[in-house]
Amino acid sequence: DPEDLTVATETVKISPKKNGFFYHMGYWLDMNGDGRKDFLTARSNAKKGHGELLWLEHPEGGLSAAPWEEHVIGSMGDVSFAVYQDLEVYPDELIVFAAQFFDHALSATRISLADGSLVETRAIDDQNIGSAYNVAVVSLNGTGEMQLLVNNHETSNRNAAVYAYKFP
Image (cartoon, one colour):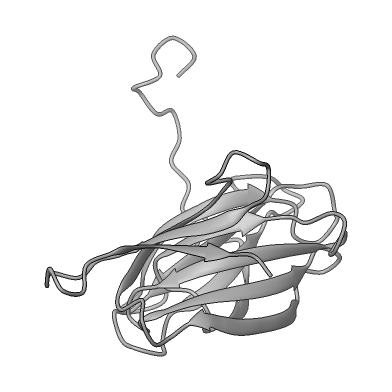
């Protein structure tokens, strides 16, 4: 409502139904070069190996043409992720750093921005991180050189931690 931001004039569900799955977060990005902002998100059923990184394609008909077509990239996301672009090294790709809570892993996935397809994925840490919870791409030293800042969601004081990962 243009007069009151706390009042919605329309609610549209853009995701198709997938029994037992829930969504966490997402980013608005043009994933296939058509000029429309698609929605990159992660969903999970709280089971190891079942989380999915996917994007919902913004249809020509606009927001209310729902549900939007889903494109599952793979099982490399379930909770939180950060999106990063390195225009010098991967000019036509998106890099997604995923904190995989249920998989006890942190991963990096490269996605083509020409069609939203998987280019490559690999584990950064699947030994030490535990229940990875949040990930951010930051310059920790203030030099412009980027690092990953990741925390886990462990209840044990021995395992709860914040980690920093240096880019290669």
